[in-house]
Length: 118
Image (tube, rainbow, N blue to C red; front, side):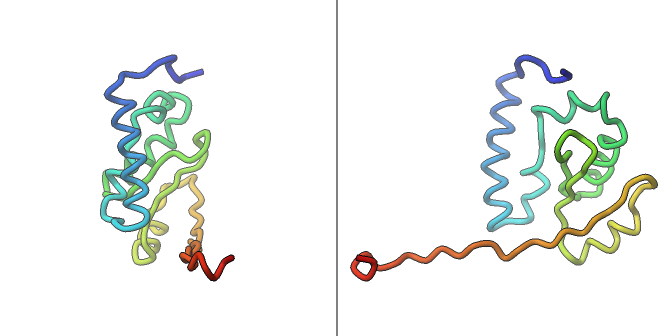
């Protein structure tokens, strides 16, 4: 109910570009994660309903931590490397429960020779 029925074209285009950048950041360029996780479509509109969440995301991003609202707002996703996890957990604001989630190695795709697959 907090989201507007339409958003400015520049905000929609910006977020679409960030979605494409996110793919590159997650696969090849983790240094682009902060920029790739910028949102102009929902987070600022939903701030009145989740001020603590918005404050945490803002504080993390101010420290150059790529952080976003996850789900409807009770969860914040921070994309950090293993070396940053300890300091992030130590500095976690009161009222938040940090959880470290491992990341799987993902999938491997191999191109098969067309002749051998027949």
